[in-house]
Image (tube, rainbow, N blue to C red):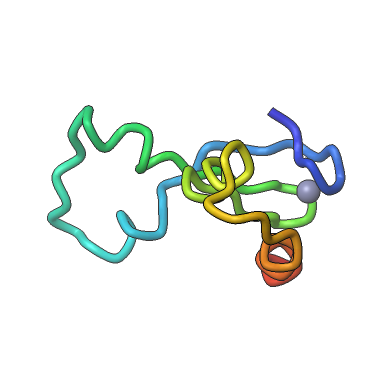
Length: 73
Ligand SMILES: [Zn+2]
């Protein structure tokens, strides 16, 4: 997987929600929601929510997505 912004290497990282709860039980049903990635080059953060919004936006809002991407810097 490569970064959409800079083509850098994107690695799988523990989602922020897991980092915030030590006793979180990781189950298979959480597999999709628990996925998160970060670009090693520019630090762009991607998680399942962002990916889902890209594939099927609840409402067309390119400005909102751009704001999210800009905020990851
Ligand atoms: Zn990047």
